[in-house]
Image 1: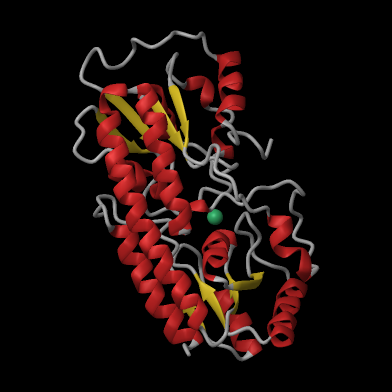
Image 2 (image 1 turned 90 degrees about the vertical axis):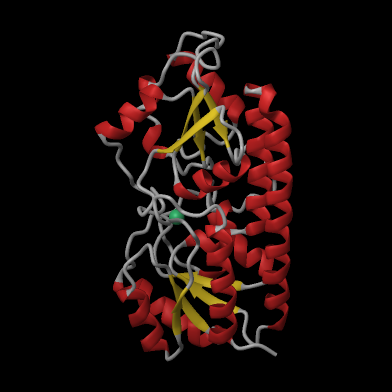
Length: 314
Ligand SMILES: [Zn+2]
């Protein structure tokens, strides 16, 4: 069920099996909609899209400091939040595997907004890594769900969220659409700056810690020659570590980039063994509980500096 939540159409069909279809007068009549967003990056985009609207009460399901919920298991607290939600907003592309068994706890008539639904240009892990011969036990059809770490994809997510929110709450459509378009503009400008840096880098071949930067790398023309961890965040075996070191030397990679969301020791060992620098890039998968609305841009601007100083520029 890796493809769970891939499409809102499939999801709606799935929900219909569990839930009586009460066409909603459930929200709106009172003080607005309880919106529950699963992960921090989508929560931040949703807050930007809804800024200035008082019809949505937006909450986050998973702790903002947690990072990617690969292998996450729901807690009773999460389920209580789910029971209250009028709208559940998800990353999609398989990121929310942990919700499969819990969706029955949802309120009848709860709407689901899949922030990645309908976005084309999706990457698959097998396409990304087919050249490096590592057997990482991946499903052949597994989507890479980390759209959010690419500003260009974040722009599409914002527009997507606005249009799905507008269908549920047409009165807010104007605000959502204006906010999303402005946000998309800012994201695309940021994306241009990253792409411009990509063209000036002395070395564009890198190793990352897990698949979180694949969409960003595509935007920038970075070539990810390998990852330290499996897509689910598992540590490599000794043989896999040696293979990554060999690839770094063979392809003359410029750096290993670690993420603040994962322990760095294995990645540091690989970088030292291969004799190349390592540095921290932040995919903005985490942040403070009440992060400023421009937290993502702040983080990406720091990434631009780190990429430039670590890989060198022409
Ligand atoms: Zn991840």
